[in-house]
Length: 588
Image 1 (tube, rainbow, N blue to C red):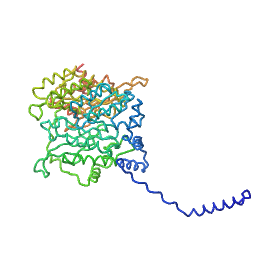
Image 2 (cartoon, rainbow, N blue to C red):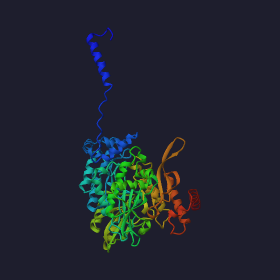
Image 3 (cartoon, helix red, strand yellow):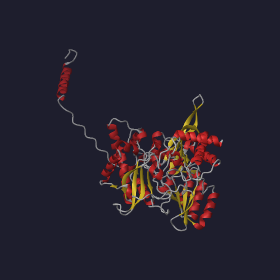
Image 4 (cartoon, rainbow, N blue to C red):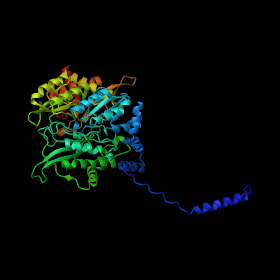
C-alpha cells in the first residue's frame, strides 16, 4: 500500500481485497424462475412472450393490450367521457373493445358498432336504437355488410351514455371492434325459409354468448369472423369469413351417418384476395361452437403478434398448412375431427340473388317476408321507428338485417302485404329495386372513415342513378364500392368491384378521388376473386366505365342465361377492355 494511506485504511483495503478474492469462487444463487402467466389472458401473454423471446418486436397494439387490458380501463373511459375528451391512439384502440371508434379526421366523433347475432333484433329494440341515434348520434344508422348496425356522430361526452343505452335495450357492443371476434352472421331467413336445411339462429346465439362470457377469447392477434349458412335462399357470404359453417345434407348409403352436417371452411379474407376453403372436416350442429372455440384458440397461440398486415388466420394457414392447423385443433379438442368425402353430401339448395328484396312467401303458410331497400344501408331515426311499427303491427315483430346492407320484415300475413308496402313507401323506403340497386354495396367511405380514399356511399348512389338512366338490366349484377384495402364492402366478390384510390392529375402532384375496377367476382357456388380491369380511374369517369361494361355484356353475352361473371371469364383483361371501348364507340 502507498504511504498516502493510514494504517486503518490499509487494513480496510486489505480486508476488502481478500473478500473480493474469496467471492470469485462463489456463484450467486440462481434467479427464481418466472411464474407462467395465469388467468384469462394467459394464452395471449404467453404468445407475446414467445414472439419477444424469438427476437421479434411486438406490434404497438399488443403492447397496449398488455399494458392495460381494455376491459380493465372502463373507469378511465368514463372519466374521459365526463371530461369530453377524445382518446389518444392507444385508448382509441382500447375503446373499440366497447364498440367505440374515434373516426377523426373523417368525423370529429365516435362511431359505435353493435353485436346482433344472426342480424336479428325485435321491433322495440330498433325503435330504441332510433332514440339512441337521435339523442346521442347523428340521427341515423347504417346497416353493415356483417348484418349489423352502426351509429355515427357520437360526441365524446356521450361515449359511455351510448354504450350503456345500447345495453339497456338488451343489446351490446362489446368486442365489436379491435382484435376480437366480430358479429356472428347467419342465414337472413333462418327459420322462415322453405328451402333451408337448418335454422342458424340457435347456432349464432350460442356462439354469440360463448364469446361474450369468456374473456380469454378477446385480444386475438387480429379481428376474426365466423358465419353460419343454413342453405337458405339468401347468401350468407360465409366463404368470406375466417370460419364458415355450411349446412349440408348427407343421404343414406354413402358410408356416412345420414342427416344434417356442417362443412367447415377456413381462411376467408377477401381484402387479401382469399376465400375460405373446404377442409374435409364436417361437424354436427351441436359441435360447431366447440370446434370454433378450438380453432380460435390455435389462432391465439400461433397468430402473428408483430406484423399487423399478416396477423390474420389466413397467414397461419399459409405458413403451416391446413392439416397441421387441424391437427392443432384436434389437440385442443382432445379428439379427432370428423372427415368424409364431398361426394357424400347433397348439393346446396340454390341461392336467389333477388330474395333479399321484395315480397317472398315463408315456409309458414300465409306469411311472407318483405325485403326493404335502403340507400347503401342508411336509414334515419324516423325511418327506423316507422320500420319498427310495421314489424310490430303487420309482421311477427322481428327485423332481420342482411349482409346486403338492407333488412327484412318477417311474418307479414298475405292480407297485410299491401298495407306494409304502402307504409314503406310513406317512409320513403322501397320494397323493390332495379337489378343493379338490389346488389349495390358500399362501405362508409371518406365521409366517416379515415382510411378511405373515396366517398363510396355518395359515389354508389350517383353510379346507380347514372346506370339506371341509360340501360335496363334483366339479370342481377352486383356492384361493390370499398374505400380502402380493408375491403369492408368486399369489392373482390362483386360482379363489378371498385376500390378507392387517389389519382394523380396534372404536373403539380395534385390528387383526386378515384377507383381501381375489378370484374368477375362471386360467392356461393360461384365464389371467385375478381380480376383487375382498370387501375386508378377518376371517380367521375367510373360510371361511364360501368355502363360500358354492362353494355358489352348485354350485347355479347350468350343469352340471358349467361351471368355477368361467366361473360367476363371468357375474356382476358386486355380483350375485355377492347370490347368495352368498341361497344362505347358504337353507342356514341
